[in-house]
Length: 465
Image (cartoon, rainbow, N blue to C red; front, top):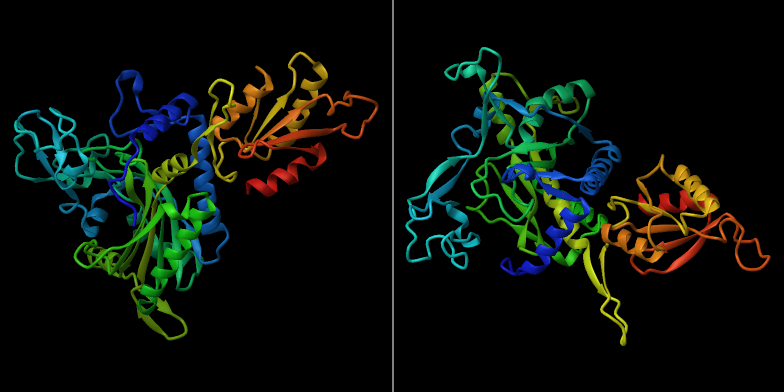
């Protein structure tokens, strides 16, 4: 197992700097000093995140017959969260420092910095004076309606702390309206909100975040087997999107450390530059959730098995992934610095984001060799029009072609398509065989090959899907 404390602060600083400089991720409300624990995705980050969510949805919903989709509301009825145990039971232990007035999560002090002396953890400095731990409510509470009264419990709602509960509450509606049979799953991608005491590690721990979650309903005797099967499928997914298997670690959470509702839990963790941290949990929740909602609502939630003629409350296996955490893992995995310096020349360090083409924000860049050659520009525009309806591409005619290649390397574009003199039939000599072909430059190897324009779309589609 990797060392959870192994960190590379310098690498992480470079990644954060690149994210802002190139438009992957910005601090929310930076213009006004920033909103702590909240982040805005820029143009490239938006595309990267959308590619991840689309691929997750395709692999887990569209390509399966046993999983359906849901998009539940963010505002959540307090009765839902009362039944689930969140109200009155969803908190983290917090301590205050009477000296620096800082507030810290009591069970994570080892990863915090003392405000008086950052080289120390809170409580380690001789001037620190920490209070006893107390519970800090993690949910965001709000009042609904124009005439809402703070004392009216029916006017109280919450921003959901997880996407799971809307799935459990709507499970029977989905089952009845789609005539599904056990085992089956309901998938959801959506925002959740937790009032974290100490947001940290860039986008890893935030107050507003997105989850990619499945609740897979099954017979009780199949729960443990399906938990292991889902673990294997989730590891396959991370390999498909380009995460190094050696940087992924599975933790079998022992008895006494699992959530109270869990009969089995695996955590999938990744080696971030700030240490080994969780990407996803695969939990066998038994019938805890449906049982709680059936008891609190007074409505039957049993499944009727047509073959055996029995009623049963399904058990649930939950693969729950952090979307923002996975995006951050993709960025950390992709970041590379390659030394191309010559023995007798000046230093030449190529910064390159080695995204898997499926995940890359820009799939291909269209680069006419010269911007002042109308024939080259016109042909480049034709290629742009051919590809743009099918994928996200980038057109660039400014600066030398080598500099344009490097700019695309830095944002992770896997393929650059150069429109040169051979493309328009003006190459050396009388040979016109290269007319209507383009030069494709590969990001990772920097090797080049020629391809007919007519073959471009299927060639690219095969490599980016």
